[in-house]
Length: 454
Image (cartoon, rainbow, N blue to C red):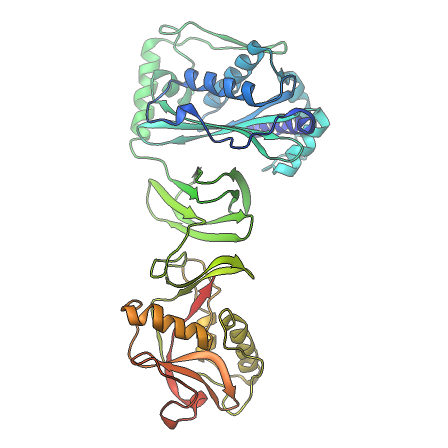
């Protein structure tokens, strides 16, 4: 709790002044440490400090706010080293840790839980900081990955983003087990920030070795995490909370507590994409958002893409078909005109809503449109019965290419003809009609296939 408050306060101080001095960066993700070689923790922190000095306007007030890791000692060390490096360079004004503590104590009650960017910006504005430093830790099994970001207090934009792969040596292991740095190998260092100091206390070599062995045994398997890769830039949300601003072809790793179902949302410039991810085992689960799908590829709801209109408009670009049929179902509302249904691309969703409204009023159940609308796959609940033209595209782009597991039978569309007939299509020869085999279409039993647009 103390660590979170400390971070919070610093963040707020940083954000307050951002408006005036932080220099914007067109692409903050570039980093020389992102190569396959492993760095020591000190090397990476020095590179991160240099990057911050290069990218943030000289004289700006910056606050090393928080660093999330499995142990406070590791987090403290990262913040203290960054502070010491920045103070030594004399290019930026680093917020005094005593000032941060004062604000933390003053606002401890109000900000005793998770703090969002808005709250941190308010604190930053109160403290007059222009930028905030934060970061996180990911155990990659054989090595450690750290990411350090600098946020602009005024608009919460990412000014600097540095990532590096860190060797799991005696120093990092000791810090992660709560030990101090082993001065038998490295001389102690005193970090100074505006008058406050923090000194590493030595431990014996035997103590350090014991701690390293203990930590290694606990982390023999990789941590549980979700690695998100995006095709284009935007804001990433995890469990409805904003966690990162990403650029084109960027990635971000989110450590999670354990197996379960988690929600990811990426807000792009022209659309929002939501994904439900189910984790059942340890390790890194990779998810791609903002992908460019092709006809026949697997969609985000595990269906099959059967149409791409080329760009996002009216809230969607792709059409995705479920991989299984509803068989022997009626259209419903026989003898009653729904009215207002359309036949074009994108019309099936509205058609389905109109049909269900009428069916619910008349008390009918288990009709084609209703079954499609209650479908839930991987957290996606926006399925519907396709319009006549959408149904035809499924036939042409999937069935004729022997994709999608369709049968040579009649399939319902959501496009009504009149009070007793609706459009159907035979997936054996592609015929479309409103009077299949002379039967009153709405009263007949045919197959149906749900689709969704996104």
